[in-house]
Length: 639
Image (cartoon, rainbow, N blue to C red; front, top):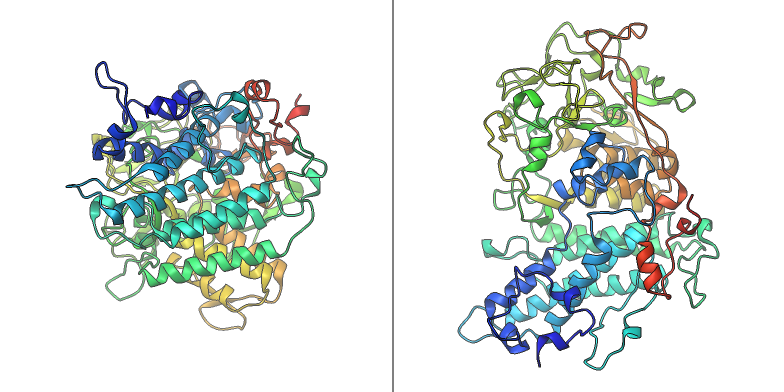
C-alpha cells in the first residue's frame, strides 16, 4: 500500500515534515520503504518525539507556560520577535490569536504518526532494530500518544479524542470531524496507557545514545503530574462548569467533587517515588569539605548537570540543548539580551536564611505594602554594611572564592536570603563574575539602555542558567532540558498526602528533604534546635507551607502556571498590577519620596486574567470547519 493512502484527507497533517520522510525521485513512498528502512523509521519516531515541549526556552518563547505564571517577566516589546505569550498575559487575545505552541495543529499529527508506528514497526534484519527494540518503540509511542492527549486537554480542556484512529482508504471526511468527550474519560484513558507503557519500558537505558528516550520512570512521572491536576479544584467539582456540555449533551467537566481522584493521584505518586528510588534516583547534592551539603552549589548545578554527569534527580528530560535562554538571562552590557526578568512577588516568596518567610502578605492586596515577618529578620530599608558570608566551597558563579552571597552595600531586601534565591535573581549592583563587576541597572546604566533589552522591573532572572555560560565571550554551555525532576515528585506527594491523610508524618519527611538540600531548617512537630515548629495536623497551615515551598523550589520551571490554574488561584494572583524596582531610577536610594530612587517597589505592568483564560480558546476557524466542536469554557462570550 502506498503511504499516501493511509490517511487520504490528512496526509499533510501526518507527514508534512521533510526532515524525516522524503519522496524518492519519481517514486511514491510506500509502507515497505518506510518500515524496512531503519533511518526513515527512526526519523519518523524522532518526529513524534519532537512534540514534547522544550521545558527551557520553549516554555518561555514558544508555549509560554513559564511566562503565563507569575515568575518570569520578559520585556513586553519582545513580542515583535514572536513572543506571543506576552500579549496574552496582559489580556490581549481572542479566538483568532496566534500561538507558537502549536498544540492544536501539531500534537494530533504526532499522535497519529505514533499510532501508525505502533501498527507497522517490525524488526529489520542485520540492524539493531530487533524484537526487543520494536517492543520498546511501541511502548514509547503508546506513552507519547497518551502524553500528547494530556497536553491537549490540559491546554484546551476540550479536544477531539480518537486514540486509535487511522483513517481507512475509503474513509469519509465526517469520520475526521469529531467532537470532545468528557474530560475524565480522556484522563482515564491516558492513565491506563501511561501505566501500561511504564510496565513495558526499562527504568533506564544502558546506552548513552538513548538518553531522552522514554523510560518507565518518565511515563510514571508524566502520569503522576496529570493525575494531580485532575484531582485539583479546577476540574474536580468546579461549579463554574455546570451546564458545559458537548454536542451530545454530556458534561465535559464533572462538577461533583470526587475524593477518589486524590487517592488515585496519591497512589500514582507513591508508585513514582518508590520506582524512582529503586532505579537509583535521588536529589542532587554537592558537599563542602566539612561534609555538609553545599546548598548554593547543589541548587545551582541541579539544573546544569546531566544524568550522565551524576544528576540522578532528573526523571524526564528532553535532550535537545537550548542556549538562547542563557543569552536572555545575561546583562546587556556583558553581551546578553538583558531583558528577561523575574517578578517582585517571586523575590518576596523566597525564605530567609533561617527558613522563615520574609513576607506574610500584603496590605489590602497592595504589593507596595508588604506585611513583613518580624521574626524572620527581613528588612527592605537601607543597605548592608558587611559581606553576607556563607558556608560554600563549590559555588563561585558570582563571587569567586569569597563565599559571599551578597556584598556589603547590597540593598537589605537581598541580604540573608536562602541559597535558592541567589541562584534565581540578579539584582542591581550584584557582582557578575563573567564581567568582573557589579551589574548596573540604573537608567542608562551599562546594563539598562532603557530599551527592550533591559530588565523592565529592575531584576534579571537566573533560574536554570548554566554557571559556565559566558555571555561576555559568547560561550554557552549545554544544559539538559529537564521536564520533571524528583523534587517535584516529593512536593506533589506532600501536597496530596495533606489532602488525603492530613497529619501523615511522611509529609514532613519529604518536605524536609527539599529544605535540607536548600540549606534551610526543616519543620518539626516539636520545639527543637535547627527546626521550625509546625502543626502537622492543621491541614490549612500545611497546605500553605507546601505551596510556599513549591513556589520557591520549582520557580521558573513552567510548573507554577499549572499550579495556579489547578488551585483556581490564577484569576486572583494573575489579575493585578505587577511590581519590581524602579526601572527609571538613577540613584542608589530607597527613599520613596524621591522619583530617582531605584530601590523602591514600582508598578511596571498590568496583567489581566479572566475566568475564561484557564483554558486556551479553540481557534474560531476550527469551530467553523467542524460542527461537532465546542468552544472552551466562557470563550463564546468573549468581549
